[in-house]
Image (cartoon, rainbow, N blue to C red; front, top):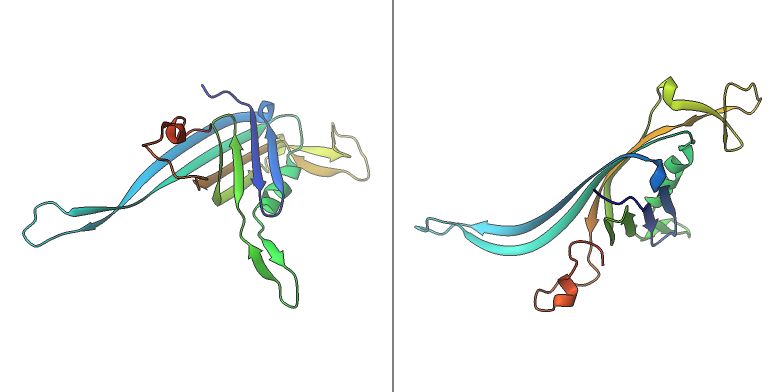
Length: 182
């Protein structure tokens, strides 16, 4: 059983972050995939192909479901802001730095990398929506500045890990906890 601590997705380039408290998590699934890649070629008369090592990639996919008595609308904006690159504003806006992330995932790991396929999906079912005023949930009050908030939110993404240092099997310190956080 994974010990729930905190979730934090931090865009190192812009400083934007999306954070989730562990007690807000209703369901959490993770798939940690480590893939060695090879270039394959065949030779005339050779029964087996020649396998030349290319690289190894690590992709962590996570699905997080939040459900509770609080409004998660702010997280939709937080996640959107974390995906924006840093722009060099001048005569023409150009990307100065692509997003690079630090991901802390419920005590499972704390790594650098890039996000691929981020999806934040609020529930539009009436049982999962509440009236919100000034950050507090209301139960049917007729306030003029009422708005809807989401009390159920599903988040899924793939995170490609970019190691700060090369895991080296000759040095026990660099692989002691790999692929997990140190």
